[in-house]
Image (cartoon, rainbow, N blue to C red; front, side, top):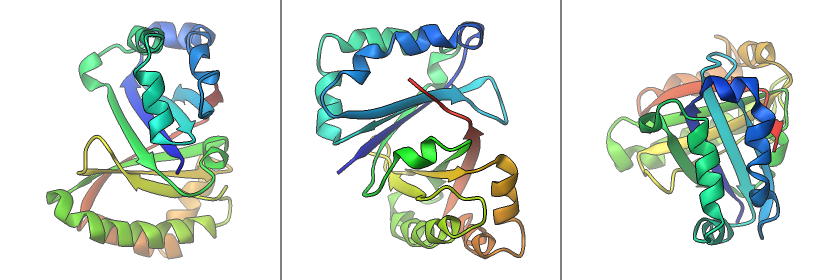
Amino acid sequence: MPTIQIATFPVTAEFHSAPQTFAASLNIIKTADGHIQSFYGVQTENDKQGYFISVWESFEKQAALRASPDYKVVVEALRSTTSDREKFSRHNIDVSTDAVKALSSPAAEIVIFTLNNGEGDAPALTEILNELTAKLDAAPGAVPPAYFGQSREDKTKFVLVAGWESLQAHQDAVKEGTDPHSSIAKIRAVAQPVIGHSHLKVV
């Protein structure tokens, strides 16, 4: 089953001035067994927030790279672009669909949900997100499929990824009165979302 690693971190000025240096330092990932695609970029809403997202054939193959001595190069690359290491977060989620298409869209939406009452709310949020992703896929301006998963590292967190032709397309698709909005309105009863968008680049 494919695994997606989503890392978020506050970025340094160097990340903005020479992003190609960051990308080049991650070349080791591209040749790793099981690697499918990796992306990086800054958040549209806050350009001091960065993303590094990698797609793998399985969690086990990603774990094999992390266990290898070569992985320290990747770790140092990420550390060099993080202005506050205390705010670096990483979540791995398992999905059963094409994970690359949404990430390759002009406006990739990344949402991190925190359950209100711990793991006990996970089934309720899963039900709502299944409903929501189906509606997002059918919305004008969507680049489906949207997908989500529970974090392997923190069971109180879920991550949703959806692709859009533009930020405006997403805003129009979820505004009050739309089909997706009716599902979104249910979410805050069980979880709090943090939403961001990015025009991600391929590593």
